Image 1: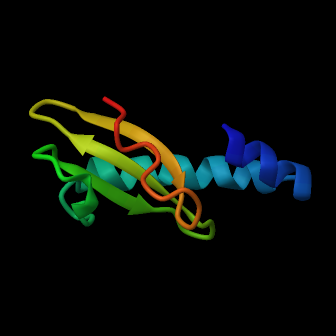
Image 2 (image 1 turned 135 degrees about the horizontal axis):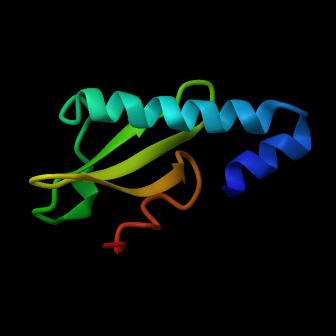
Length: 88
């Protein structure tokens, strides 16, 4: 994961903390998928939401489906907004 590598290069152990926060974000999504805000800029009928990561300026973009949840991106909250929108 690019973000984890970048943080690890800046400070030993920080990349691992990023991965831990990513995993915690997935657990939060699984516990309550409808809790997080829909991404309105998607202009689609797809149920796409964003779960912010704690401590890092990233969020998990995910799509809720009938029987599953698909992580679309681990996206930086301030750079290239919605670059991942066309992913399926």
